[in-house]
Image 1 (tube, rainbow, N blue to C red):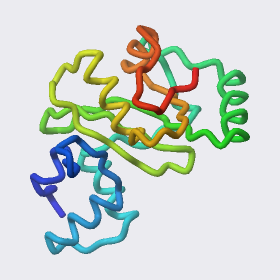
Image 2: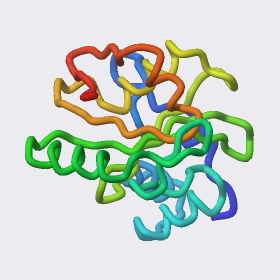
Image 3: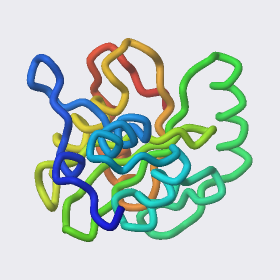
Image 4: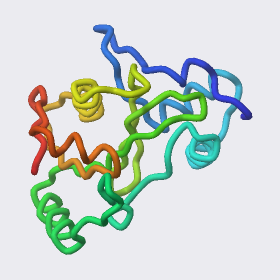
Length: 169
C-alpha cells in the first residue's frame, strides 16, 4: 500500500449528502475493496506513516496555540469527572496531509480514530465548528472536546454550537 485510493482522501457522504467521519475500520474496508487486505493495526500505522493521519494524542500531548501545556491536574480531574458521567472525551487536532488537504482528527482515550476533511485549506471558524459537529455524529450524546494546538483558538471564540450534542466546558 504505497498510496491511498482517491476515495479515502475525501469526505464520505451519507444518504442525505452530508459529510460523515472516516474511521480506521472504514478505511480498512475501503482498502480491502481495492485488494489491499491488511490488519486494522497495520492500516492505522500506514495512515500515520504516510501522513494521512496525525499520530493520536493524549492528555500529555495537549498544548495550546502558543505551545503552552494544559494544566495537567485540572485536565485529569475533568477527564475523571466525564468518565464517571459516561461522557465521551475526544482529543481533537487539525492536520494537513502531504497533498495539502486539511482534516480534523479525533481520538478517544482508547485511541479509536475518527476524522473528517475540511473543504478549505485555511478553514474559517464556522467550517471548523461544523466539522466538529460531524465528528460527534449529531447523536445527541455528550462530548468533551480536548483540543490541541491551533484549534484551541476556536474553542476560545465561542461555545460550540451543536445539533443536540453539547460540548462540555
